[in-house]
Image (cartoon, rainbow, N blue to C red; front, side):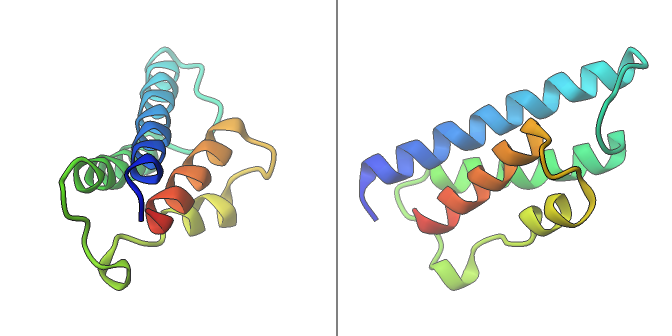
Amino acid sequence: MSEPTTRKALATTERALSEIDQELERHAAGRGQVSTPGQLTSLRRQLAQMAAQLSTPQLPPKDQRLRGIGRVVADSWPYDNPLGGTILEAERRYLKA
């Protein structure tokens, strides 16, 4: 894929990481609105791996890339949750990069 596609994927992934961090802060303050801190931390770890791969000159072949993060969100989160939408978009762009 092209470099602009990879840059967009990385930017979306970084935005998802930032939004997860904000949600974790809300949980720490007793105001978390979605998921559990454990699940958020797991999703964050996967997104960080995706960001690291997107930051390298050579991405793994598409059939060897991380998958499944979107399934967790789609199966258990409210459909209209903005953070969920950002995570789904990050995975979609990562898999297309």
